[in-house]
Length: 430
Ligand SMILES: [Zn+2]
Image (tube, rainbow, N blue to C red; front, side, top):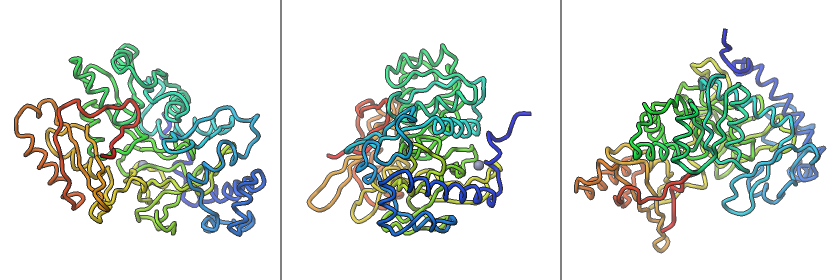
C-alpha cells in the first residue's frame, strides 16, 4: 500500500515532536556557540549561554537575528561548518544591499530533498509525474529545491528555468509535464500566452498541480489559477535564510501550511516590538533551524506575517500550521493612517468581473501623506465595452470595502502592465 505521509513524524504526537525539538534545540545552540565566534559574541551580549537553554520555553532568552544582521556577516561569517564541507551555495535575491549567502553541506542538501519530497508528496506528486520547473535556475533556491524534491520522490524534472515563454509551452506539451513549479504571476502569464496562441491551458495541457510560491498571492488569485489551468495550486513556503522552499507545505486541506517543525522551530512575534505572541494571533514568523549544518539560523525574523496554530489538521498531520502569508511587515503601506497590504488590494481587484490579474499599485508621496493609485487591466473581453470609468469606480469601491480607504483606480489597456518571468513587481513609486 502506498504510504500516506512521506515520513511518520508528520503525524507524530505533539509530545514526541516537542521531545525531538528540545533535543535538537539544545544541540544546535551548543553547536553554533562552539563553532562560530559571531554567534558566541551575540549570545554573550544577550547574556545567555548554551546551558541556559534547557527547554523550548527558554527560546526567548536567545537574541533575534535579522536580515541586516546576516548582511553584516557577508558572505560566510555566520557559517558553522568548514568551507571544504560546502557542496552548494544559494543567495537571497538581494534587491536591497548585499544578498544573504547560504551554503549547504551534503547533509543539508539531503535534508532539503527530504523536506521538499514531504511537501510535494502531500500535494500528490508521485513517481510517474513530470515536473516542469520554471523557477529561475541559478543562485535562487526555488528551482533547485523543487528539483531535489521531485527527484527524491522519483519523478522526472524538466529543468527549463525562466524565460522564453512560447518555448516553455511547447516543451510542457511535448515532454508530458503533469506539474508546474513557478511563481503564481508567471503561471498566469503562461496561461495568457497559451490562450493567445489559441490553446486552452485546461484541455491542451496535462498540468494537474502547481508548486507555486516566492511571491505574495491572494486566495482569489489562487482560485483563478486553479480555474484557468484546471490544476490544484499548492504552496511551498520558505526563505533562503532558513533553507529555501520546504520550510512549510500545503497539505491540500486549505487550512494553512504545515511547518516541518522537526527541523524548523517556529514562533510568532509582534513585528514592531518582538514580543512573543500566542497561537491564533497574527504576527511575524520567526524560525530557528534545528538540524542545518553549514548555515544554521537562530531566531531568524522573516518579516512575513501569518497566524500560527497547533490544532490538528483534517489531513491527520500534527505538524503545526501557519496561515498563508498575509503580508510582509516591510510591504505595509500607511495610507491616510490605515495600514494596507498589497495583498488586500489584489483580493479586492480579483473579486470584480472583468479584472485581469495584471495590476500595479503606485505609491505617491504628497507632502507628508502617502497616496495610492491602482492601475488595473481589464480582460480582453471586458475592454472594448466603453464603460471602463464606471468599472474602475466599481473596483475602487471594492477596495474601500476591504481596506476602508478610498484610492484612485485607473483602467489601462490590456497588456500595458509589464509581465514578469520571475517575481512580479506589484508596487512601484509614482
Ligand atoms: Zn493538513
